[in-house]
Image (spheres, one colour):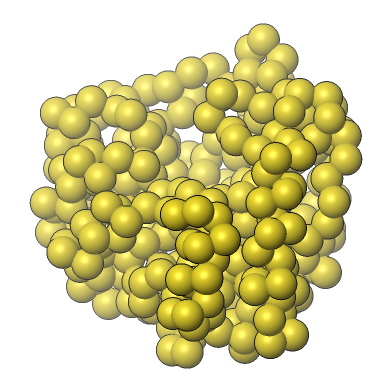
Length: 326
């Protein structure tokens, strides 16, 4: 497998595997107390895990200003330190929050907010530019998005960002950003259970990278049995958009049975379940860059180990479709 990817025509090269930095942001919540993080986190372990990922060839890290209400950006910035020039950093804007109370306060899709949010992110990350700046409002109005795209073009001209993208699961919305000269990617959900053929087709047509969130289905494909989850974990009281989990009990039994049905295929060739799930994504398109989350050195090592295993075969993809009744 080609272990590098280029973001569209941007000239930005990354490892075929990126690391998602939502979980290392730690605990934060909505104003009504709904957890929005993945539970408690050990910052020193997060830093060690990032260093281990770098040593194993991972050069792409994806975060957002709202993860841990700024905390994820701060931890990532501290971990990268003098190695910032060796990596590609992506972050996102569009949500507003209170760092002091670690509370999400809503959204801001205004043109003015883009520059304010970027300035704050640069300070937390300890850098003078962001490689990929992403709109974090998946269902933003397309006309407003066109204005935000134009602001991103200005930021590219000023050297504050190198390229931009939209984090959305709607191909029609992604196409609005794709009209911009320096739009290099779209971030969208993609995993064995949630395919996205229309979005992958758009990436091919518009020469965009496909950055894949939820590649391990929020942990269902990570390989460990999910029992009841800690109170600060978003999966303990899952919002409507989060499939596969039931409030109070952890993973949904129907979803676990689907995991079991394809376990043997995914774990072929000495892969772990997670490595097989990442291999499925690479087999779907050479433009894909999955970004599994992590909270420990062990998780970093398992995820990075998928690079050596590479993609599944076309026959294995077809067999998974057959087993899942697709």
